[in-house]
Image (cartoon, rainbow, N blue to C red; front, side):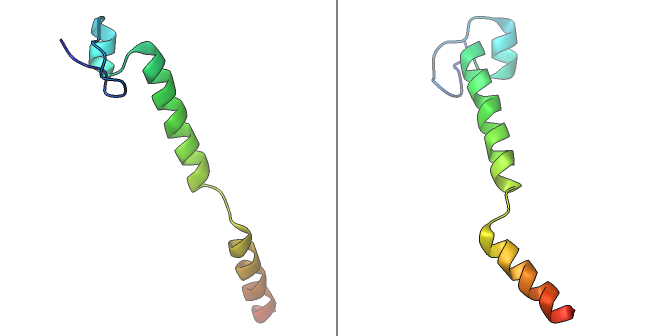
Length: 59
């Protein structure tokens, strides 16, 4: 039998084995992916300030 990639428990259903995660761990995995995507799309205050400086120089 296959093991969950997140918690290493034994997977019981064919769907879980196909996904590589049990149902709870799969939900946590999807949330982690969504959180990582959200973080990648964030703009820092330093980027805003630098962009403002560049806009002022070109004006």
